[in-house]
Each structure stands twice: as C-alpha cells, then as structure tokens.
Image (cartoon, rainbow, N blue to C red; front, side):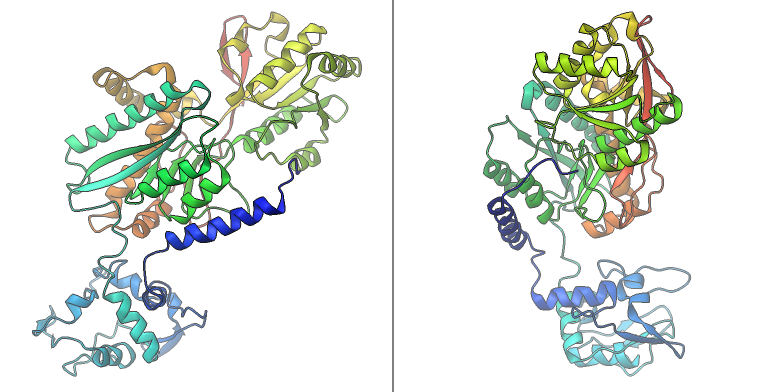
Length: 515
C-alpha cells in the first residue's frame, strides 16, 4: 500500500546520483579485465553468449565448470579429490624457467599464444598434453586477451581493507533522538570482542581494526553521510550497522561501493524483487513482525473481520508495511487514526461501541503509546498488538484491566540466547566495562560481529570479498548464540525471519512468551 508520493525530480536525482557513485565505486577493472573476470568466474562472455567446453568427449556449457571452480577465486588453485590445479595468476604462468609438476610433467613459461593453445587444445608450451580432468574451452582471440588481462591482476584484485596483518571493518550507527550513548555502547562492545579475537592471534594473523560512521542528528545532510562513506572506502566490510535512519541516497551510495554490509539492523530491510546485493540483514524487520501479529490474533485470539482493526499512523510512519497482504489474509479493517487527542478519542469511542476487541497498532513509539492512553480514557480495553520495537518498559505499568491483553513481537527472544554466549558477554561486560543499559542492542551487534569473524576464519587465508560472501552463503544455519540461527544465500539477504510474540503480565511486571 503506497503512502507517500515521490516527485519525478527526486527520483531523477537518486538515479543520477546512483550512476555517478556507481562509476566512482566501480570495481576498478578495465573493460577487458571485467570481461576476463566474467569468463573466469562464470564461463559466459560479457555479451551473454555461452562458451562451449569439452571434457572426456562430452560437450557442455562452460558455466557448468568455469575456471574458478578448480583454480580458485584468486587463481591460487584448489587441490581436491587427488586433482591439483595449477596457479593461474600471470606471474606463475609466465615464470622464465621450466616448471615441474608432481606427476613429472615439465613445461616452459606461457605466452599469449601458448596459453590459448592450452585452453583450447589442452597442449602446454612444451607440447605436453594437459591432464584429462582439464576441460577444453572454445575461446576466441578476444576471449583469451580478456582472460589474460584478468589473470594479470587476479591475485591483486579486491584487496581494499585487508593486508597481511590487518582487516579494516566499519560500523554505521545513529546518535539521533538522544541515542549517542547507545551508539557508543554498541561500538565499545564490538571493539571489546574484536580485541579478544586480536589477542588470540586474529584471523590468520590479521588483526581487526574498527572505524565508525556516526549519523549525528536529523539535520545532518545526505552529502555529509556520503562523504563519510567515501572516506572509508578502504574498509573491507561494514558489520552490525544500524541502517534505520540512513537516507535512501546514502544507502544507494553504500550499495554502489560494493563493500559488504554484514549483519545490518533495520526495521525496513529490502525484500522481494529488489535487494541490495551487498547488504545482509540480521532480522526481517517490522513488516514481518506485523504479519506475525496479525496471524497470531486471527489464530490464537479468534480475531475476525468484525472485531479486528489496524490503527495506523499514515502521517509519519516510514516503515514499509505490506498492509494489503495483511488485510487480504486476515480480513482486518484499516483505520487511519488522526494523531490529535480530541479526534482520536472520538474515533476510539466509536470503535469501542462497535464491539472491536483486537487492535493492531502501526506507528512510532509515541503514536502507539498515545493510542493506548486514549483507549483507556474512553474505558476501552481491547487486545493491543504491536512491534516491541515501539514499546518500552513503561508498558508494564498500564492498569490491570489490560493484564494479558498487550501482545508484543520481537525478532529475538531470551530463549534464542544460550548460556555459553551469555557468559562470554558477561566476561566482556566485566573486563571492558560495558554499559548494559543497551544490552539487547549489544547482543545483536555481537551476533553480527561473530557471524563476520567466523565467516572470515572459514574462508581461509587467501580471502577476497567475493570468497568471503561465498562462504557466508554456505553457513546454513549459523549459530552465534545471541540470536536465532542465521542463514544467507545468493538470493537470501535476511538471516532470521523468526518472530517471537509475548504478552504483558502486568501483575508480575514481566513479559511471557506465548508464540
């Protein structure tokens, strides 16, 4: 359901800026190197035309067995199953002296012409036949030139933010609405964990260094945020970042840097046909929570279209909620409640008299709090459902008429956090003097950080952003101990879609898991 209109001028600005920043943050490869990389990694030409290959007399498309499958993402060679593919970086291929292999075969250094012969006909520079497990690829002269262009830089590509001794990571956080202490607490928690990793030797003797980008306040210009990102272009990956308050243009700029954003947290992650390829979120956001609440009301509270409404703040709420889907699945009725108290009281009194028993609140924290307050003023005590993101501890102080009638949703609950992980946090909190006033945010950030560091360990010493993401896609599921299991894939950017629903026990001042 569309709630905002965007002018043609703004759309044009976003598109133009996206193109400009995409150009500025292109891969840094020449057109020939780009085409060569495509052949090497996918077995397809830039035109989309497939490349034919042969193996043991069988013909197939090269995309089934591209060069990178056996020779590695950086041309290092991946020994497997008794097969030992040779390195394909240009310096290894063109050594000016004879190379002897484990099987006794010797060959001279390659040239442009001899490499084409090896690829197409399976004959090396010394006129020896290559192993039968090496496919023959039908490359033309331009294909070979492009491939060689890429092989000349394959072992040097994608090294931004990583050296033999350092891995540079970043975090984007917001200090808006008085949340500077929260941002500082999250950063300090991640620094503490990375310090422990570094003291343990890092990852393959590489130590982590963290840089922070802070969204200062609501008046901070988009250009300022973009400049902050541009200055951090040597970052290997962003981790545990809060993308809630980042303008669209800034997100697009961040996307076009191609820097992976691992374990991002926002109430509004992209879904469906459009996803930002380098963004990997921890949770599914408010839309998933609202859908879960609506289904819970229907299935567990026996809510129906005659006694179930959505109270929705259309004036300021900026989360992408699929109300059409919710209405279609549950038959729920949509009510736009005017924010001012006099009109809201009139509308809520009317709903009370209609016999409405279930209200799903969609709006920011102030809006949701106000609606419950107004309902109580007209002596109306329906079941109230809302995302826990917009509720505070003060909700447990409501009158007992609302006991067991307030239902909150959360992407992670206490049961998702195991004892070992929590003891690790308590150790860090004690030794690094962490402020546990923001404990939930700290634990979520730790989950994202552990996800990243463990992925880096599993990727191996020879690492690139591309190979790191390939490893991330294979972690299904990943247990951090602080959140529900996470899993990602080439077309899956949300780690956990789990939603826990709890009810408010106002007598004992606590929340109880119900679904």
